[in-house]
Length: 180
Image (tube, rainbow, N blue to C red; front, side):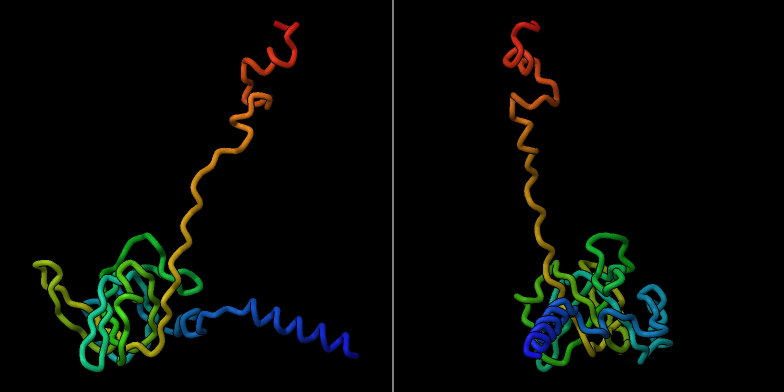
């Protein structure tokens, strides 16, 4: 009986460790959620609509009681993570009631937000006056940075003169000198 209970605890702990830490609102898109392209230019028609958008952080601006996150919209993968590269449909602003640390939410990090469309705000990008759709954040997930690719290392046999492939001319000379 004790053995069965022990294995049950181990199984539950293992399954819990395998569970995703991503909130379900981020993993699953809300029904009828419009894309950034559909909302852009028609923000008044979509006010209050729940959306799940994501992208790359451009800047974080903290004001009294609120934080504004400017994002370059990216297409979302099946788990809700914004694609690292790809076509962008523009930019949007995410409004958070509270403080978001600009060091943690640094430019270049991936962020997915779930919230309601709360309007439109015009801000300059360089010398261009740009119209940003605004999302009032209800839930968000800051994705961990991707792990760097390991440096390329050639296979160990490339420098081995005794390896028969890629047919070093001295391979046969050292091993079978009477063939030469």
